[in-house]
Image (cartoon, rainbow, N blue to C red; front, side, top):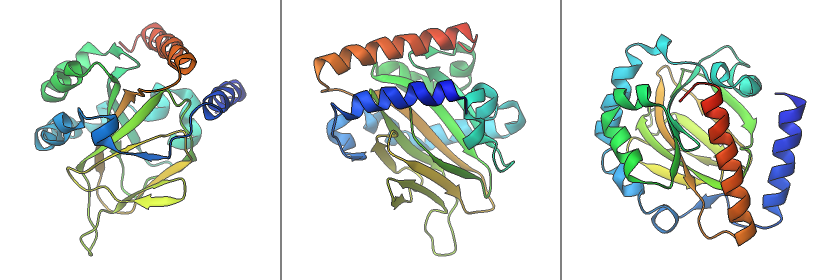
Length: 227
């Protein structure tokens, strides 16, 4: 990861950390009530994702989309592929068209700023890292999660030292600026829906900063010709 990227995201996190004291895990019913639109439709969303997975080599690896993420995406040689439908407010029309059920729900909820289907290869480990800023919250919905002999999900999401195992149709709303890492401890691919949703209820100066950063990130997406 580039030094410039590290320095800029580190500075942004420090600014937010000085003004926001929410815990790493948040109540989705209170902070993102529209989560039900996605949870209730998870079998339909899973089916769309599984159809995409039939041609998995056409889905880019995360570091192919963002070279700055090579340290967490490419480190062990196992795939972490990301099918991006929306990024910081910029919709990617060709990808939205391939997932009409998911696209419809994303378009219905203005607070959904980014939407990605995440495909994690067997035995892939995403090392510990932190998201760039606290102006958004991460919503995670299990779509096709392998299970172990004990019936528990084989994919482990560790956030701020606590392990979470999220099964098919289960969700978690969390702040990805806390240290986190992921393991797929199975022989099968794990598929999850990741949404970045606008954090509401921040101090006015943080609301303004968030709007500026989100706008800048959306412009960068368009300049990269992703959208």
